[in-house]
Image 1 (cartoon, protein in one colour):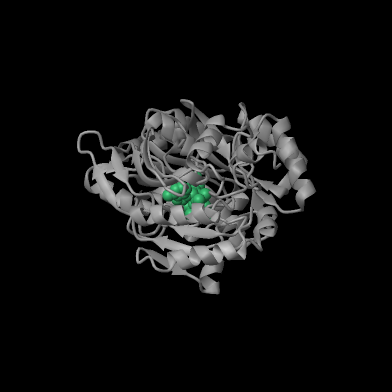
Image 2: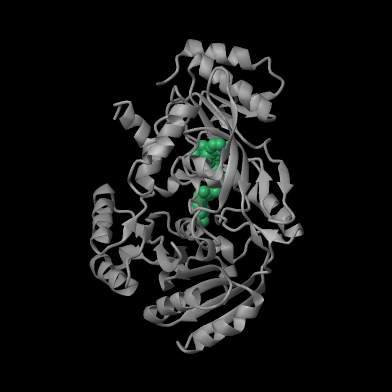
Length: 453
Ligand SMILES: Cc1cc2nc3c(=O)[nH]c(=O)nc-3n(C[C@H](O)[C@H](O)[C@H](O)COP(=O)(O)OP(=O)(O)OC[C@H]3O[C@@H](n4cnc5c(N)ncnc54)[C@H](O)[C@@H]3O)c2cc1C
């Protein structure tokens, strides 16, 4: 549905008189705001290289968002929302051009409820600022991506899934995190609609395909001064068992990651003393350090107490985990990419079988998570890029041992997730974006509904 030059010109003429809408036309700005961090995938890098917005627009407030939405609807021009642009799957790349809308002016924290800790916030609020404000009130965000210092809360809600905190709080789409939201519809007379927790789920992790979110209501957790601990193990079996034991112990954990020895070699120095071992990276409450030492002693592991986290600094253990592990590995060895999966149980046998088949073309990076209340191991293994056919074969082999793949080399919400169409997401698009102008091409259920795929 690419928009014609005539509709784009008419749209631009309409917007240029609006003081609440900043228009960015410079080729360098168009280029910058048409990309995200998709280049971790060689598949997406090739697919998305030439996608460009026609115009980038920054609305000053929610009323300006409504005027922009109206203009796009009237002229039939696609609108793709972009926050900090740290997504990995081209979530905010405009496949069909049109307008890219920046959320950076929508950053107000409307309320932090003293009794419940529930926060009401605009989507463009940087998570770092939000977490700082919460901490001043004795609260913290439950879930954060490892990009939390630059990413926004709206981008995380629409494009992310989990991360730091997932060992305790599971994933963003678990009921209880998103408690409601406000959105603007893509119509010639846009509506501003408030959704309950149940209705809001259709916009949770929908890549901004079915509504422009303008306010979010989220649950938070009591703040903890997390302590950084690195634990080194000689044997992989001990390291995996220790990771699971920490996840299952009666301790407060915010993060529990494990890097295989060759991956650790490529990590920056702040992961702890240099060691030729497998390393666990933990964020634990101060009262849990003794228990970690006890569990580690049973496995002849070496514990490094790295002290309290410095949330005001630039880097901490957080920035070595989740997809930051991939970032550091690729900085040192650009020929690597990654996969995402939930490992089957028992985990060790599945990993051993894949190692036998794939050798050192597949290196393990594990994250302990809570999945439907149980401690499970998610893996974001590093994969040596040897072409599409080999990648497909690897995913097949992972599925054959019982792993569930969340494919980071695809464009649609469904294909990167559970693989199935969520009827509620599609119904929400029909209701809030009837002409299908929001981030076109990213919701497979919508394309199939239109018979376009
Ligand atoms: C090194 C690295 C590490 C990462 N680690 C993690 C991790 O631990 N966990 C994780 O889940 N992700 C992770 N990511 C992916 C990404 O950083 C996060 O999901 C992040 O929260 C995205 O936020 P953003 O502000 O950059 O959003 P963007 O990338 O700008 O946008 C993401 C999606 O949200 C939509 N969107 C944004 N605002 C709105 C709005 N107001 N209304 C409707 N739609 C909207 C956009 O259209 C887009 O589809 C990582 C990425 C990198 C590069």
